[in-house]
Image 1: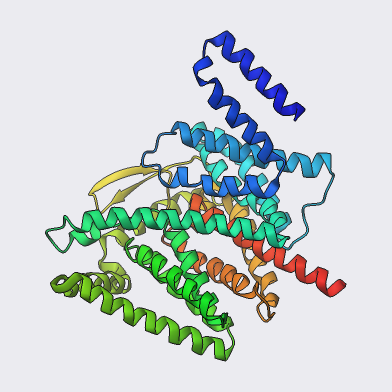
Image 2: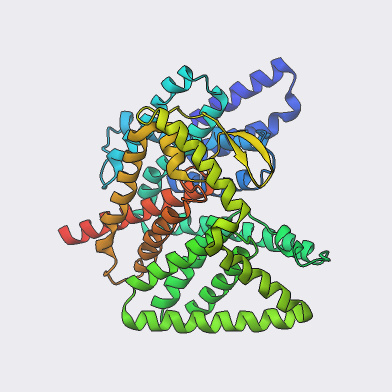
Length: 447
């Protein structure tokens, strides 16, 4: 409380001197809440997770005030966490497989400042890309929070709330646009692409839980969750996430027992059939056109060489590979950009964004950065395999986490999951959940 008093006293002094007394109550409230939250790990983590909605709803490339506040609060807390655990408490954070490679990976990202300076990269872009990668470090405090049942509940409910808000927002906006369409192609043009990884995560979790759960009430809730987020994911018309979700569901199917597989397949088949009937009743004469577009877009993933979007990404990858070939070991540092020709637009772009996440890592952080990241990523998955055959209420969560990690590895060939903010958050959460499960299982076996 002394710290709260001193911080507020300082704000009063600054406000009086600068003449910004009008904003003083808001500033006092923010500082007080921030300091109070900082004393409770789970609650500030909850605030950071839900605060990502500021980034997801950001429609411009400029840094807004809300985005700046989120960055200061989230990364300020992250820094305070490591200072407290490492320097003050002198704790060892490297307790799970992949922890040391994760620390090494982040150090390599920071060290990329050297090639970034040599190649004249934009310092602002370097800092922004580093902050995105810093999101992986959230796995450490998230793991600590998830070691208790209450902490895990708060974290997961917060994530579900975030995904739910994004789903409702997308459905509302898409519904408004669908009423105004005059041509079939506008069904795709009105799609809402924000939040695909969130929807994918909730769909996979709901499906895994449906296969394992035997309670009628739980199944009813899980069915509602599955339908809501399946519709939200469908409205994105993102083929990569559709295929990634199917793959993740297949992974879930593999790790279930035979009775659980039958249960999951039966329930999801009935849900899909019911969804088709409901869509037919709601769309009426437009059902055939909508169905043709949905299935046509899904099947078009198999005709990639005829798709302009894929050809554009292919040209993008060729340009990046040419840059990598000239400097494969060191890389060009975060913030580096490249030029490529876009068949979709018919112009040459200069961009720092690469749709292939593996090439992005290699291009920015060199061969060492790519190798270390893959080592830590695969290491986390391998370490969690032993938890699949465990019984108990946490088994659906462990299976979901690994299924999502595997699915994201595939999606990252065409849609970058390793440096998109929402995907980074989900990956960090999956790592945390799996590591917490490993620690819990180790504690039970030792006792």
